[in-house]
Length: 439
Image (cartoon, rainbow, N blue to C red; front, side, top):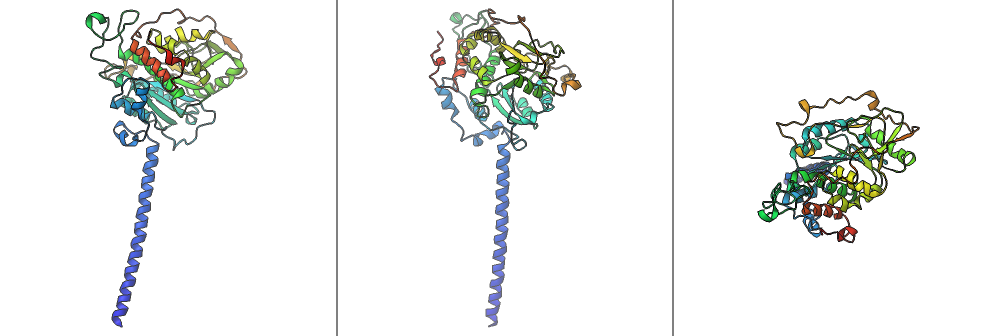
């Protein structure tokens, strides 16, 4: 009998141990699940580095087959990986889960000048209302230092897109440099090289043509290729890495966009700065209507459709500058003056001393002493546009107009065809553009 009692006691102890073990295992499993969910959540709100992309993006669209169907250049592995990043969701959605209903998306067009980018990012961080909107940063290829600066942004939702057909991404083939490309003023027949020169007899420079390619690719992608902006009927603001943005810029832009249909129904856009980048504004108690500038310009989808329909004019004009191309050939083709509405005091300033094509190395800093000392007065910190103001219209302003032949740099048939292909990327082949040939 004693043995039986002892056996029952041992059994009871074993059952207690089993129950404790099961409870412990349950706690461990729940903890592990929590950790896994946290990791998934964090990865959803961050853009992985290039070395981490392969596994994360394995389920995303087959980029290579997509590009082949459009007759785009054959992509290398690096280009494909960049194209996959473009489909990733914005970061910081955990910090800013909802965008304001009437938000104006901001697109920042950047190249390879990190000191410049640091200045514009710092200025954006102080813009009133910036947390309400989405910032899209469009990179001309991939530069690690530029990428790190953007990954450090915490003041709003941020989406990065990288031009996958940038010459910087193709080191030994078109759109980059090919071994048999003609150079400078080579005679293609005598040198047996590939390329067609511009109107001045010069062959393409990949670093130069990347400026126009990037802008056109960005425009087509932002308006027609991203789910974040697809079907967006409102205005989108475009700025560049050498634009200092004042704290009141976003609020002033919201006012200009709301006033434009009433005060200037024929205006195509709203601008944060005068078209003459050397001016800071008139200081009048009046709105200004003038030719569209290239510093802080915003327009809507309707205007984009008008621009997109002029793809042939844009892609065939022999000038590597996107803005001069627009002023000299696209805007004049609309048939009426292209006005923009702005305030009498600038809300954005162009700074620096290096062109986009120059880039920036350690020995040739583009900013004096590595910093920008921009004066921001109290009036620049709050909205300073009044709805009751009238509009002063500038007629016959100086600048590039129809008839200007261009500065060249854009004469290669391959660049022109790639430009046309960008216009078709997100559209059916049954468009008027599909009938355009290089003849």
